[in-house]
Image (cartoon, rainbow, N blue to C red; front, side):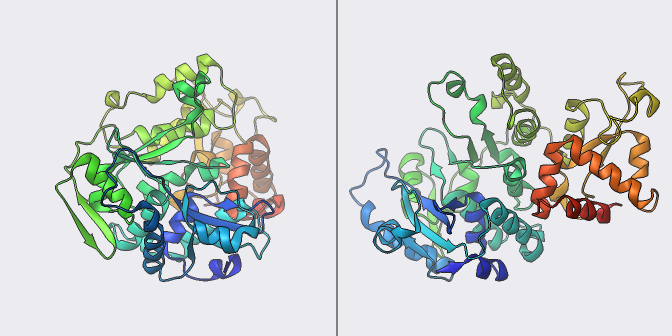
Length: 421
């Protein structure tokens, strides 16, 4: 059985890496982690020429062959030999990869280390093309738990997250894995009609346009391929190295900024907060839940996130608000009629685009922003300003803890200070 220590020291196959970033399952006593591939029988397809029950072993074999390992086991094998690991599986899990938590770390810390490893050890991530390693990661992230929607051409998966840091993992698809924004849609459970009315509190779902996905990424799972074939009647299917590439007509892009807007709004205005019916109604209107009403203009992510923080966070300096009146530190902007602020990366952006996140951005008055420039302010004063930012904004502190994978306050302050530009 693979150990956490071994996994973190070695090169991780992109499909396994994607599966774990998508969802890490933890055993009851935290002694084991697992990645799973889950799917169930559909009543929408003809099973006369497909043996659903025996296919599981073939599928597990395909995953092992693709990842050059013998790490994947079937659910039946788990029940027979590994049940003492203590996972609460429900039966939809067909392929399981178990990892012994020999380091005794938390699930959050494991995720953080995997996330950091993705940027530090995976050179293929920097390639601008949709290379095969990126495709493997996307398959692990999306297909292994994703289901084929039989009503609309989508591949959909429940979206699990435990913090605002992990919430943003879907950005990887567009920012680093060459998936166009307009193909991605996310629908948060707190804003779903049935959830609000208490009828059906479904999980948040992440969904990708099926036509593009099966044509460019393909499907490993022959049963999911059969669903696509029976429901959507594609032009043709070509199997290359155990991947089914399915030829479906290209769809006209719609709603290119919908995914980004929803993710940003959810992180800053919804996640972890109690919302009234009126709050939910207003947010649904802001987010444009009718996808056809959204503009198809190209999104510039940097500008969107900066404007999100500028518009929707309080008009106060994140560093000196408890010490000075804002009118003594800045001026009223002529165009907006609001106090002027500069948007500051708490952890300096450098070359890490993943730090361009709303929970790493704070409003600062011009004085504090200038004082935090490298080589301008003295060390003690700069560290005092950093501490005030972390104290004033728990979401910023939480992001820094996750990014640096530590809860030690002094270590975080030192690392942020060292990153100043």
